Length: 130
Image (cartoon, rainbow, N blue to C red; front, side):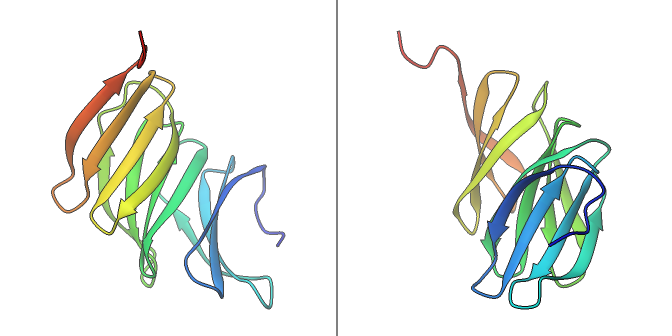
């Protein structure tokens, strides 16, 4: 698995045969596990790709130091939507189901998003506990 030109920062499984990786080279890459072959490169972030999560076998969400989250269609390598509400680096993302994700940022917030509408449904800011 050697195709990124900088540090690999994250990885997520799409299914038993394919994974996605994100890198400091601003790209995401789709890999075939058995052959370790890079099948596709996804480019639209303007800074490091820090996190990636699979929504289903054909859609992923990525987060970046460019403060955005991006929804991708795997088969076409197309960016379907850009989510912009964090005021600092998007550091982590997790899929709750096929239409809701959570993101975390260096802006000290967690956000719950509805994927189909690109709407932020809830926001938590530190301190979460008092």
